[in-house]
Image (cartoon, rainbow, N blue to C red):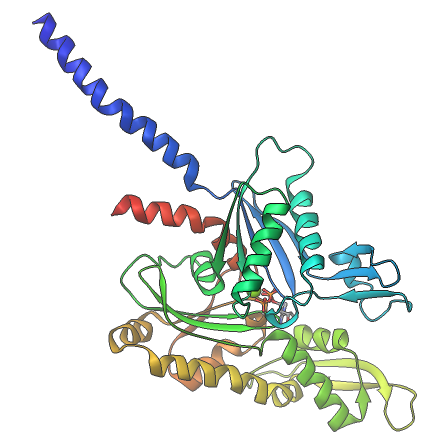
Length: 359
Ligand SMILES: Nc1ncnc2c1ncn2[C@@H]1O[C@H](COP(=O)(O)OP(=O)(O)OP(=O)(O)O)[C@@H](O)[C@H]1O
Ligand SMILES: [Mg+2]
């Protein structure tokens, strides 16, 4: 009797032990320590257990004479358009293209170190979400830069997948979801099912183009020259993509193109709707083209579940209504559209491991 008990115990122990050890080992591999959303407008760093710890503009200022970096992030953004001759402030990832590897690498290093603080006991696993327009060579450059910055392992992730996970969509299900990520430089439209992208499109028209459209409108309509930062201000304060019940106004200062003197005019939200019409229409055309290429079963899922918007550009008022009115599909914005990609990037590896566990 005693012997039997012992044997049973022993057998259970023996059977369980290796599994437990394996599970523990696997669990350690499952997590990304850091997720980075390497956006054209901003960089966000997500740390497991802490959430998004850093959000700064992807801008670098450097001295043209010595090639030395002067400032990175918010400090550098303040220098945009205001730098003396030898200092230039650049966005190394403008429009989803890495214009300068070296600068991008320095920028990544700076933000990873800043997010982690000085004390790191163990090299982290880092997942990076790159703008969808980047080439394989550019992806490799980001990967190398991340290793250079001290990563133990690097995963490069597609933006729509990260956006979907961050928006709380269970992408592992065999069910179609449409995600529209409108960032600064690029808009990514994708239909996702079973953890992969089924149909997608990416256009270099997004939030920054809204600003440019406002600059053009002010010049044409009011003979007023304004900078991109003022245009962004207008967009954020009163900008609208769709007719609204009430009209908002804002006083805008710029330079009169005829007299060359400063001038202030009052701009209405209705005018912004007019200014943005062409640009928003391009995004909607792309949504249409993706819907057209979507297999019928998945299209039916999307009609049921709706379209989800992420990215800072989706914060433009009336965009949901506009998309809804042009597609006839219920459209909603993710809870925190600007951090969705960073959170999704951080959780991607956990998600992959979870999906594998379920199978
Ligand atoms: N409240 C707001 N209303 C409208 N637009 C906004 C608002 N807040 C931010 N934006 C815009 O969001 C854009 C930046 O979004 P986001 O940070 O998602 O871009 P990104 O991820 O860096 O770019 P990309 O995904 O193209 O690489 C900018 O164009 C900014 O002007
Ligand atoms: Mg983005």
